[in-house]
Image (cartoon, rainbow, N blue to C red; front, side, top):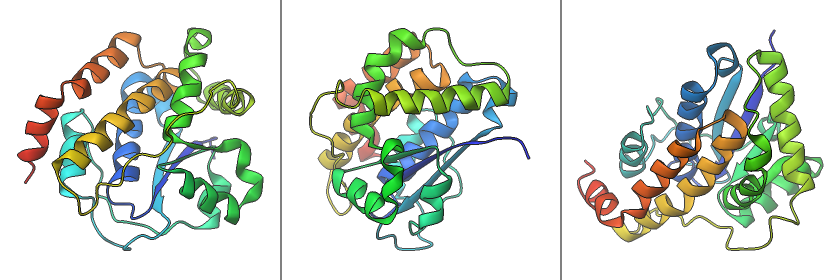
Amino acid sequence: MAERFTVLTVCTGNIHRSPLAADLLRTWAEWYLPQEVAASIVVESAGTGAPVGRSMGRTASRIAQALGAEPAEHRARQLADDMIERADLVLVAATHHRDDVLARVPRALRKVFTVREAGRIAELLLPDAGAGVAVRAGAAVTQMRARVAAFSDNRAAGGTGVDDIIDPHGLGTDAYLQMTIEAVEPLTALAGVLFGMPQVEVDAYRAFVADTASVRRLIATAP
């Protein structure tokens, strides 16, 4: 079996934040990586307190589609230890999720980050990631794992900041708007380092979510 590079995104219910992040990362891998390499990327999501079997929230799904993703047929899953073990990179929505993951699998420390923490570190690495991603799957998987190791090595250099992405569940439009803003910028930085998303595309995504009036209209018209 060919080697795989697996990303696991984690939030609480696995119906808003983590499936949104997973849909975006999965889509960007398909867009920006050579076909052979994209086929070696697995993006999964799970929740620490998931309503198992529930579909992705309609507003989160609408946001994913507006950002170009093709939301997969999603059913909420409960986080399990084997998911953490097999992942090469674990991205969590908030610091308490990181604590939950590490309480389960302490040896996963070097591959577990909040989305926003990983995004800050990726911003530091972007100039050094300019060589792009290897065109062969095996070499690309090795390269991506090395970049995750570099995230860990540069954790302190990433500094401190607000690491949590707001949970919009049960809240109004402002919470979904805030979630979108907080998630997209770091995810684009990660896609630049891991998948070779061009800077012009990174800038376009960030400009879109910065246009809060447009994003608010999008959220308000979600079915």
